[in-house]
Length: 135
Image (cartoon, rainbow, N blue to C red):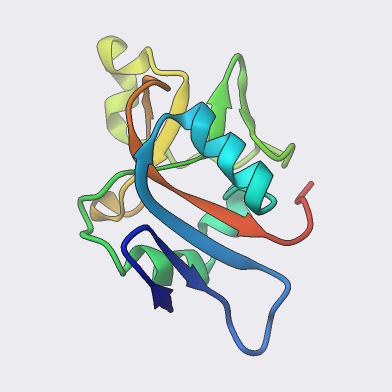
């Protein structure tokens, strides 16, 4: 893992089809998506990426209570990069009506990577990926 103050880059030597970039600078979900699309492919999205050991390795470089944005948002819930949305890993708080008003998703690895929905205007770190769009 290569890290500096603002970002970390991780890729395996055996599989260079994807690189994950943890951007530690905190920003809104929309700005995070724009940054990823301008500089990489998109926000990390889909079951394959979120359950990827490489993403977990990237997250090990920050405090486990750090919550990060990833590429899930809701008009109806869908992935930023167009990936299929059949996998769910929501935090139990989702059943609480007051906790269910957010339109953007984030995760922290202190709760087994379970997802939470949050206001898109909150500022969080985020993970981008390089490589082909998943579908």
